[in-house]
Image (cartoon, rainbow, N blue to C red):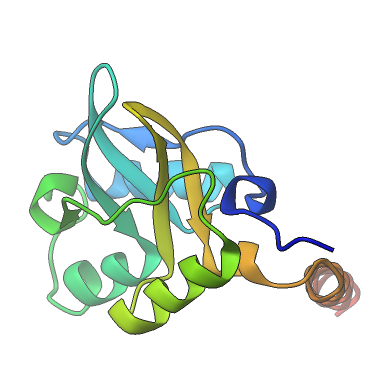
Length: 145
């Protein structure tokens, strides 16, 4: 069986993005609604300026005591992120992530942004299903008290 590519592995085949002038609170709300761990910072039509992740929110905003309503995503994003193509093998993407300390890689074909490959996308399907079941069980336990 051939190894999956990052495009075959990404769970979301749409782009979650914001303008560089958006606030950190806007980014947190967008990520929460989309249930994702990153948002691309873009200028139209498809120009990636940076990426903002959950880790960035914690280390660059909360830990520094910045006001999420007054801080723009441009001020705390990772600029010019390394991108991968749809044909990149999952193993190659994971090696890049491990070597560089990333958990998210924008997926780009030519000038078109296709989505973001995350470390979670690299997990085997069975582990992903188990994680989903675990999260569901935790939610049920929270409801039941």
